Image (cartoon, rainbow, N blue to C red; front, side, top):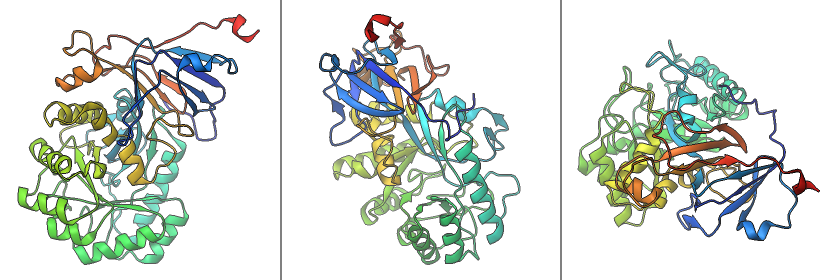
Length: 406
């Protein structure tokens, strides 16, 4: 199901009530004392208690959460887009829409590295980046906001090339190491140019992932100084533990744990971050589509692994895939439940027959939650997810009562 073009603006007032648990996505305050929120024209307008909203203007729609938890839409910090909702890596159509059913409302490209015949000359690199940025700005599979057009750093690119891309709307750079540039000094130079023109940057970490990529070890990662240390737990092959821990200690940059990496190494990075009060640096991605396939539930599964095996509180684990990523990527319009942010929302509950007293307890036992509804920009994109196990409770739209408008 294709989403609306950006020109289509959501309109109207929506009241969500009977929220059992409001998960903010903000590490500083992961749970909000609230059971209701109001959406106006696609943006969160007010958060609080339904009893305090009785005198406000009548909403155009009322959603009864029926005790479900509500959290910000999940952000997948690491995908490899190609053409529309098709991935040449697995020759699969509909993977982005399917990911929306896993609670993903924003995806960020780590480089269109799987694009068939990907150009490697400066003119071609720029052309692909600008075309991809333009295409996904106008096409939103399942309503998902895809930030694409991530040029893979190649030999021959100049500062003027980055200026041209930045002025054209390109806001991200793909993984250093997937192209011709694989050394630290050149990487640092390129990343400096990119930042100058408003782009955030990434560096591959670990062994080669696809033909043409290379081993990127601790020395290169630290010297290249990208904003995001992509798949610090390997994509898919992780570096030795001593190199990983050196990166954690010596670089101040974001540490990305991915679903398609080494889980043991990811848990080690999580433990280091928890021990060293550095959870604000940890973000999550899938690194899909990849050789291991398409993972519509990849972010939910990673949250569940980090909480159930890594000992991280579930409400804080959700922040790694929401508020942390939004802050590090400069996405000030989404990622947390707060007034003025986009109404990108996921309704969760524990799955039927799951252990645990509630949704947090269920995730802490290692079970995936069920998704009962996903909203993007205040528009309902799906009711019950077709990919998660069935949620015990799901939100419902309350039938309109004309007396409310009298």
